[in-house]
Image 1: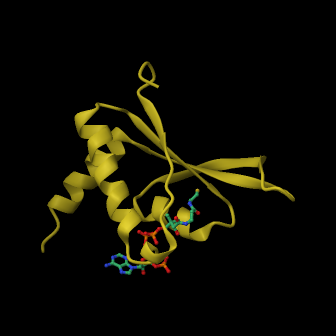
Image 2 (image 1 turned 60 degrees about the vertical axis):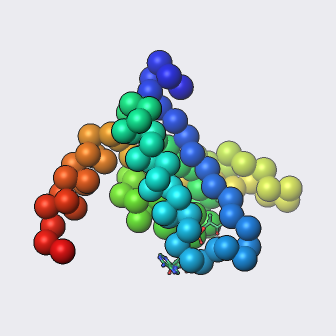
Length: 104
Ligand SMILES: CC(C)(COP(=O)(O)OP(=O)(O)OC[C@H]1O[C@@H](n2cnc3c(N)ncnc32)[C@H](O)[C@@H]1OP(=O)(O)O)[C@@H](O)C(=O)NCCC(=O)NCCS
């Protein structure tokens, strides 16, 4: 959404490629592109509450959990709730500056 400078990202990886840290690295690259090249202000990630692998990616990347959307997706046999995570551009810049100042 260009007017609000917000975007939502989602991810899906082939089974043979999961559990190697690929999606976290891919998301880092996408986040860098969206904030630093596209000039966006807010990135949102939504994950089903019981999809812990997906939620861990958002949490590892310092996204904040903003709330739960109740029964917002039909899975064929039941509704599931979604966690809404977001990262703001100033938070990203602060984290980046902080990590650059850490001793290696
Ligand atoms: C959710 C999904 C995208 C995660 O992809 P992924 O590449 O495995 O995720 P990550 O980048 O977080 O990988 C981290 C895992 O790799 C492991 N790993 C192995 N080597 C690693 C390395 N060199 N660096 C970092 N992590 C590494 C980590 O220990 C971690 O394991 P854990 O999940 O058991 O804690 C993938 O499981 C998927 O496509 N699932 C089906 C679709 C889906 O649910 N999509 C989300 C809808 S909201």
